[in-house]
Every structure is written in C-alpha cells, then in structure tokens.
Length: 599
Image (cartoon, rainbow, N blue to C red; front, side):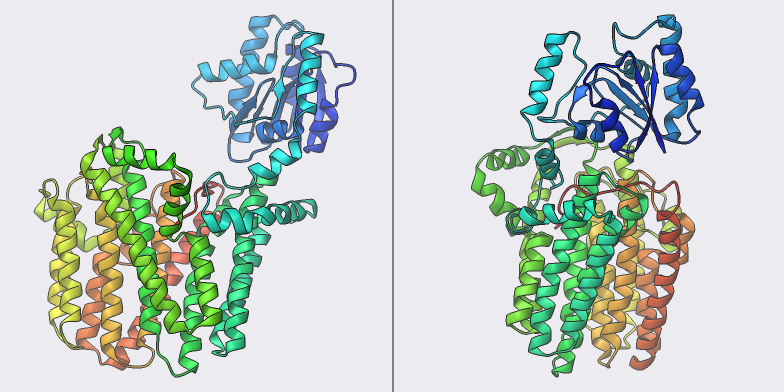
C-alpha cells in the first residue's frame, strides 16, 4: 500500500486526509521535517511514498495526477511530491538534506514538499509535473488565500475535467465526433466496476476476432455482423486508452497489448474477409496481403520520420511553417486528419464496405485510400526534409539503424565495403536494391533464378545503405524501402506460385515479420533499445529473409514452396513472440502508451 506523509499542523475542515485515503494512500502525519524523515524511513521498502503539505488545497484529481501515475518515478504538484520504489533513495536524500538545513523545525512557515522538489531538481533528478489546466493545487499562506483557493476549487468540476482529459488531445475526426462523446462514459463505467484497461483491450481483440469469423462465413448476414462488430471493437479500443487515462492505470503489459493488438485485429479481419470471399468463389488473398503490406509500410514511414526528427536541432522548414499556418484554419485541420485515413476513418470505411459491398470492393477501395494517404504524407515529409536545416543526433541514427533490421549478410558485406555512400545516394541505393529484387520477381515466371540474383543485389545495396550513420536528409526513407522490398517480394513470389495456400502462407509470414518490426518500434519509443542482436540474427534480417524466399522459390515446386513459407512463418512467429512476451512482461519494460492516433 502507498504511504502519504502529511507534513505540518492539520488544518481544521480540510478534506486532505480523506482525499489521500480515497486514492489508496495510508496516511501518516508528521509535525516537522525530522518526523517526516523518520516516517519516510519506516515506510515499506519499494512502496510509493508521498509528502503532502497539510495546508494543501486543491482538487482530488490534481492529487491523483500528481501522486498516482505509475509511469513516472518522481512526480509533483504544488504542495505534494511522490516517489516510486526506484526513486525512494533520491527522495530520502533530498528530505535528509532539507531536515538538516531546516534544523528539524516545524514546516508551517513554508512547504517541505516544495523544498524537496527543488532539492531533487538540484540533484539532477527529473520530476514529472502534470498539466493541471483548470484544476487547482495550491498551498495558501494565509486564511484569505485559503478561502480564495477553496472558491476556485468549488468553481471547477474536477470529474468533468477528468472525463475530458481521458480523451486523447489529438484524435481523428471519426474518433473525436462519433466515438469519444460516449466511449469516455463507458470508460468511467468500467473504472467504477474495477475493470482494467487490459481487460477492455482483450475484449476489443476478442470482438474483432469474432468479427473476422463472421466475415469468414461469406454470407451477407455474416458481413453485416462483421461490420457492426468491427465498430464495436473500435469503441472498446478507444475505451481502453481512455480508461487508462481516467484511472491512471498504466502498465508494461498494457503497453505491449496496446502496441500490438490494433494490428492483430486489423490483419485478422483482412484474413477473415479473404476467407469469406473464398467461400463465395472469389480469391482476394493477394489484395488482403497487399493491404497489409501497404498499411505496414505506411506506419514504418511514420515511425522512421518521427524518430529521425525526434531530437533534431535547428529543425525548421518552410513546408512545416505552411503546415502550421494551415492548422490555424479550423476546417483544414480535420480535412488533413481525415485524408491520411487514420485508424478510426479506416475502420469505419472497412466496416461500412463490408456490410454493403463485397470483400473485393472493400479491399480495392481500402488500397486506393491508403495509397493516396501514403503518397500525401510521404510527399509532405520529403518536402519538409529537403527544405529544412536540421542536424540529426546519434540517437536518431541509431533508431533508424534499428528500424532497418539489417541481418548478418548485410553486416558482413558492410564490413568488407567499409565505406558508405554519400548524401542522397543512401536512400537511392535502398530504393534501387528493393526495386531490382521486386522487379526480378515480378517480370519472370515462377522458379526462375533471376529473383535470386536480384536478392543478391539487394543484399549489397542494403549493406551500402547502412554502412554509415543514417543522418542524411532523406535517410529516414531507408527502413520503409526495406520493408516494401521484403514484403513485396514475398507477395509477388507467392502470387507467381499459383497454387492454393501460397498467398495465405505468405500472409502469415508477412504478419509474423511485421509484428517483429512493430515490436522494434515500441521498444525504441520506450527508450529500451531494439530487440537483442541474437534475435535479428536468428530470423535473418530483412535481406536474409528476402534472399531465402527467392532461393526457396527457385529450387522448390510451387506446392513445396507453400509448405516452406508456412514453416518459415511459424518459425519466425514463435521466436519473435517468445522474445517479445519475455521482454514486455519483464519488470524493465517501458510503459509506452501512444497519445497520437496512428495512420
């Protein structure tokens, strides 16, 4: 149980102790700094401890934001500071120093908690200070100020603020106007019944899987039910994040579930649509796999661009300036958010098309919309990159290298080549190598050795592209080019095989590899680095997998190739999932929660 140490003389009529108990704290009272130090030392090791000034006046939700958020080792609001187990030692040192400086005297003259926050900052400790907005958190110095603070508290409904803050500050049009107005209340309902975000996330996944099963029936009733259930799954998908923000229930396991289940749901639904179409005599597996490839590559563009510019200095661009000006015009903000087809708009589109049209039409419209969105966003980012003056850091270069997912073949060639390519030649080489292997696969019949030659060229160009740190203006395009080449080659060769089961097997392989790439992204976002090097070597890296698939297609019959793709998909999935689960359920995994809506 968490411990709250209230410092100073109790104030008549104050609800502070009751508020702290309602937040799960065991309340202790310290008359002076010396007694606070003693109580701090006596608190159970590893538990959260908070120091709160007895004169504190504010909203309960302000205390909740400042003292209970599990994502931050140290956090504070005016008049209160908290430390989780990992930061207890820093808090203890700061309190001891303030006790010595104050001589153990009563703390009625000023706030011990605020002085401790200052001391923590002087020690170089990062103390999180949540944005309170209209919420009140103050330590009044006299009765008049206290009365004014109480009036300010009464003037603001903290429950209304809490509900509003449960919704992402930046969401898509469909989510903002058609989901969040009621899903926030569903989140509150879940919180009041003790449900956790992980339980809601799991319910969302199960609902989406049932939707995929309905689509797989191939009947009109099944397609209608699938569309309705897909929207219901998205409502729950929004609710789990809103519940986490409403109740401040963040966890490393929740981070992993949130990071991966959206893609699992969407791609399982694609598979369900393809199965349903097959029951009606229409083979759309190539379209389903194409939709997954395009959507994954879009996300890699987003991730790579953001990581490349995460901490870039002198990060200015006329294009970015124009974009900021357009954001000041209300209707353009929503238009620009909609045309990139974010998850809300995309799932609504899929759901409606599933219910009223056929899987083939659904996939063609989805591919057209995603292709336009990809062209729009990528073109804008290329213009920004070419017109901005920015110096990218070693961290950004490391992140791009991790996203590249280069395996042992590229590393071996890189060591031999030693010297990398200059400037724009880096993304050009990545693009050229990918174009060669996909063209060789597309322009020859199944069983040709030409795709193998193209894959060897791809290994060489891939190694040259990552031979130097990826700090160039357009080097963020390297990982997306690699993803498009690998996924595209698997899609083309499976389609060329021309036998039942080849494309579904390719779908499974791409899904397993895509999971590995998403897992890499969320580890980087949590500042936990990339997956271990042994994992990348074990599954071959992007260039090794691409070469292997081309060799299998050249030496095996179409039926044997299908079996090989299936075995490869299962092997990659087992290795990647085992390591991913081990990492995300470990104590050291980061609590990553995306506050922006991915495309």
